[in-house]
Length: 397
Image 1 (cartoon, one colour):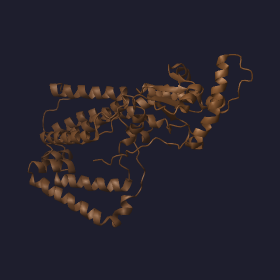
Image 2 (tube, one colour; image 1 turned 180 degrees about the vertical axis):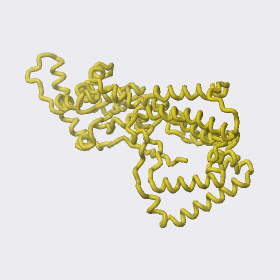
Image 3 (cartoon, one colour; image 1 turned 60 degrees about the horizontal axis):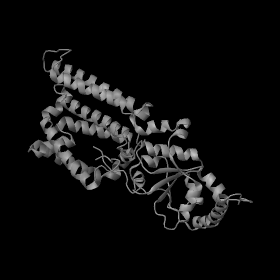
Image 4 (cartoon, helix red, strand yellow; image 1 turned 45 degrees about the horizontal axis):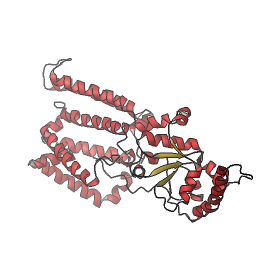
């Protein structure tokens, strides 16, 4: 299951939903005829391209679905597992699986589906798969060099081609629709049926309509992250965006208040500056943390004031605009940034001749703050970067 943001369903419920989806997935495979080896190998002989249609449709739908979840900020892409790529092992493994597919008539998933309804050939196929796994595991030292050859990390095709994910999704969906049309013509020719290049029946109309919707969604579901990052590059917009502010005096007062429990300081400086000195009740954040599942939960605590601080106010504003656009509440920025806080509070020079009662109070308060807050900073044990316990779940077909 996907790492949804926020936690729409709990971890335990996630497993239950995954089980239910798996059951229905198996039912659909069986109803589509994937429990029959003749239908599966029909792809290689040209008389039945159901396998291509089903898996191409599943892949394109999942791809556009991920773009949609990213667009609405419901998915943490950082927690999605991407299989590492080893070129030669992928080629050799693909050849072995393809040969096994042709000879046995099943892939690992469809063999389990067929075995579940009593197909003996599928059970034998699964037995062969276990033997292959055993041979690989026991002979791993012999295969390790091949297995780890030509490692190129976790590339995405869109990044390799230098295009946006949306453009790649559009092109792949278009290719899928063309492929569906072409393989239909091939099927009819191999099966010696009448070929009609434009057969507008109800089924074809539904397929075409679904394909057109996927094409539209592939270009309209622009990733929310990239949209927001472009948004905060507009300095004029950022400076005029309505945000709540906290003065350096209010911050100083709340730091001195021993009963203060509602203040939560989010520090957006670099880790080196944070380690040199940090305010009490502060946590180090990065821009990327705002888009991640667990760090984002840190900002969802109720009845707290989330104060964004950085060296300058513009950086605070950019981060606060991001957070506000993503739906976080109770976001405030420190007016003037930490530069002003150091100058007006930590480096306060008393007014020589205060002319009003306000100036007298200001002298008294800032003199106290200048003396006590550095001691609080000295005794403070930095919380460090926001804690992330979740890791990418291993997976893949």
